[in-house]
Image (tube, rainbow, N blue to C red; front, side, top):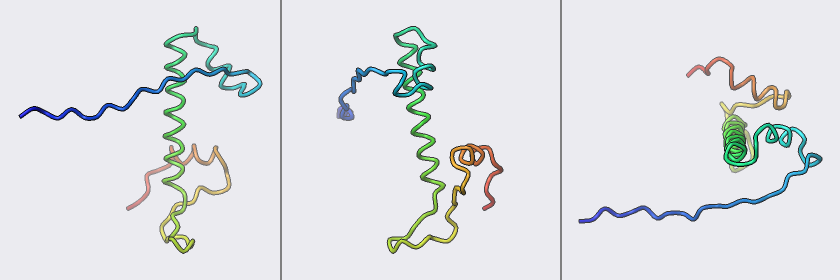
Length: 96
């Protein structure tokens, strides 16, 4: 009996231009690297970290029931914006 190979998904290839006026912080960060693999890896890393931060934010947002009411025990992020989100990452663990 042969092992079944998992279906391979197609690769995604991206080619885009980034003007400094579009996103100065990202542009300056990526310009630190010579074009090529290092710059691509930095962009890949930033995208991955952004997805992780987004998942964390969604996990910490108050949970709501289908009716729209907040579920008891949901965690709110507060009114401190991104700085508050970062502080939550380094906060003390939640009690069980």
